[in-house]
Length: 146
Image 1 (cartoon, rainbow, N blue to C red):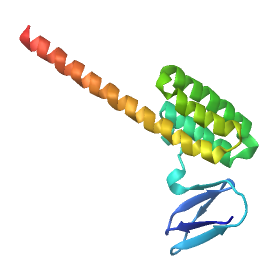
Image 2 (cartoon, one colour; image 1 turned 45 degrees about the vertical axis):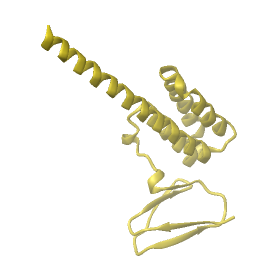
Image 3 (cartoon, rainbow, N blue to C red; image 1 turned 90 degrees about the vertical axis):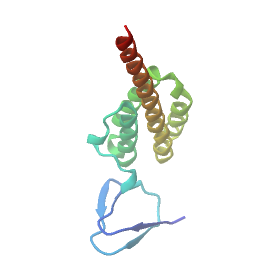
Image 4 (cartoon, one colour; image 1 turned 135 degrees about the vertical axis):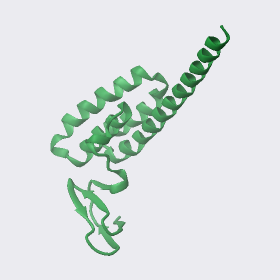
C-alpha cells in the first residue's frame, strides 16, 4: 500500500537513511515499497537527545533508519530503557510496549510508542518541579515565621 507524503518548501524527510529536502513548492511523494521513513517532525537530532527518555527515542530512531548499525543502537536502546525504568518504575508498562514492538522488528511502531516515554518523563519532571516549589515555599514560610 503506497504512502503519500506532503512536503512543504524546505521540509525534510529521511528515507532509508537518506535526508531529502524539498527545494521547491509543496511536493507530494508517493512511496510505493516498504521503506524506513521519518518526517521532519519525527526526527530527533543527537543534540536534542539530552534526557533519558529522549535517548531511548534517539537510539530507536537510529536503529530504524541505519540498519547497518541496528545492533549497536538496539544495545544502547536496551541500556537506556532499562536505566529509565529503574529510575522511574511507573514507566514499566510503557517500556514493555516499546520493547515488545522493537523485539518484533517493528521499529517505527516502537519509535511511536517511545513518545509515550518522553511524555511520561515530562509528567514526572512536572510533578517533581511542583513538589520542589511547594517545599521551597514551605521552607521560606518556616524561615519567616521562626
